[in-house]
Image (cartoon, rainbow, N blue to C red; front, side, top):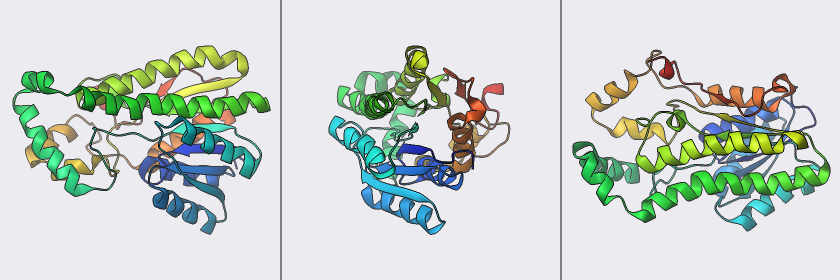
Length: 276
């Protein structure tokens, strides 16, 4: 019960890392606001939590919408009377990404082949819309969620823990497409800056930089040629993808009092990726 009587808000909690984190937090005693663009998936997560005896509430949230973020944060206060923890797990790998839509991912993989064949030309051809969409969801969406939740923390005088989801792409340029690595490196820098700004308010801010985790986002690798996936897994000393629970456990540590002297840090559950 490391999070007993705590209230957490988790974006992107309808599946994958966000869902695993919501379930893990609830197991440890937290009441959880489950936010996701796909509200039916958020409802599913809440069903799993309540069936296991936990407390949770679902809400549909487009993270690039300030009003949606505000409603999300207020739901935590209205439903559970507090707001102690924020995890910003919502994100996209490319502009057309739609969680769970493998047909769309197959189309993207086919288009991605042209990039791999001629990356210089792909940089020339990259549309500003593609770049801005990824930056908006991954960076602005993270900021908007933090701002809305932080406002409640300050109003309530709550010592808080904010956990952003960066990526190994925050530090390594080969861990994703150009807009994605730019967005995740920006999330990491924002995390460090916020840690400095919010420390006097007793709010800690840390990041998790997952490696390749088995989620709907990395299901795209199952659609790629075997030689390409062999190349990717060859970068991981453990030779496999991690599981969402691996990230959820890292988030639990950062959310709990066990990490009370951690702020402005990034943890990399990555199977040894950065040893190479």
